[in-house]
Length: 117
Image 1: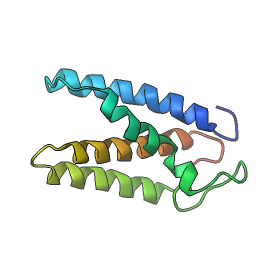
Image 2: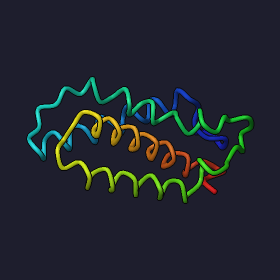
Image 3: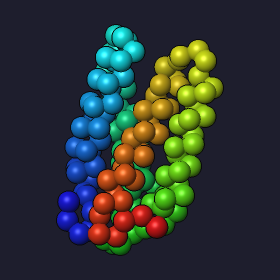
Image 4: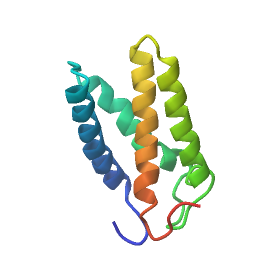
């Protein structure tokens, strides 16, 4: 990572790494036999979505999507979805994967020179 932050490819690589860690922890601790390939797509999409919604027009792009408040909102949304998913469905799992991907993007951006606003 440079002072500007991660590139799109950097965010994808970080998202894959984070996904694999989370996936294998969940699969091992909850004895789930999950097909990982169907969960990685929404995770990767979430990993690049903050830069899609808030296009990096300069090295210092930071607005609502790249803020700590939005990160806290996403964490709250993950908790609410987890509480509401009494019956595990593919839609809930995809939504959680997407939201965690977005949180991962913000987490790695928080270590850049500009950080989060």
